[in-house]
Image 1 (cartoon, rainbow, N blue to C red):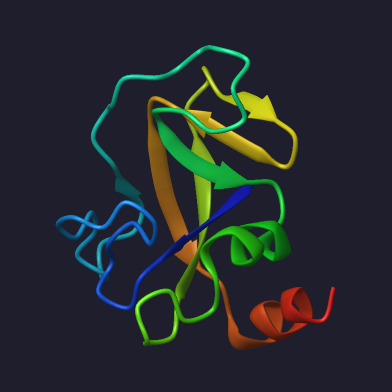
Image 2 (image 1 turned 135 degrees about the vertical axis):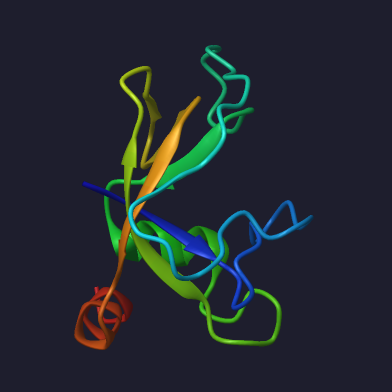
Length: 108
């Protein structure tokens, strides 16, 4: 399992744009996107991390002035790992992280 952080209204915290999830439907399959297969640490694709602490380090706890939405996600089979980040052409939102998991990640 992997982790992703969205804004309070379910937008990508760094890219912005329109909400990518309705905040209710689980599991939720995000649309396929193009995937940068290069050696670059950051690139096109659905980004996620192997740890919640890593996702919070990248996106922050309050990316838009409101508490972040922390999620368990399942990347598609074409996942590419670069350092503590990963990206894939597809991503499925599986469930929300619970408060205790978020608190534990903050203390890492």
